[in-house]
Image (cartoon, rainbow, N blue to C red):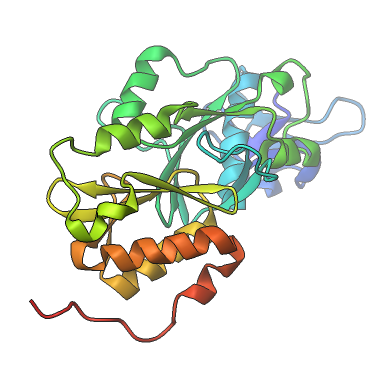
Length: 308
């Protein structure tokens, strides 16, 4: 690949056709980081060259594509994703846009470094960009020890097309196509297994919860919310597949009933005294759907714990 791309002062990959001629482009080499000159003459193909006049660097198209994909996702602060494993069968939601609160690149997690780590209200989403190198079993095992949600974006289709980078069509493909995105964690069938393991066989529901059938899965507008008792005597809730509406609902529910979010386990934990009321709210919500979530939670007023 010729030096048709460089990096501008905003750390963005730019094409030679998008910048001013000469040093006015204020760009650096994608490979070595040295200042470059935008050569845009009348006869030769437009290209970047090093200001020092050293030989052109070898630009690897796959590396440029990989870097550009990370750039696009960071700038968009979101990504269109297919349904997570665990979304209720029969849901009409075939994909959804995930908005990120923050996003970091190349963060180390005890020996494993995902391409991107996106922060959401209910925990992190790890994003792997695959062009020629895909997540192997060793890396996947390490990721499973650190994360509950990992998605891989497969760009090999564009790697073989010699597509222009950057381009509007490539940007749209990275952000909005879903056929090239695959969930590595969780895998299909995992949510139910995780739920079963999370419930201690020695934990017995108190008499007040005997009729609630815990552990229990609530299906709300095609999304799953799992509920189970923890060994130390508390109610845990988890949204199996991410939904902004579900995340906001659980946050408001926690404010009302003294719950808290446990980032390590991606659970919302409620005191035992509030368990019946929380489960009753979920039961009512199951009948009414996601659209009724926020209206079921008062904006003001938080009940206090009952007297012992």
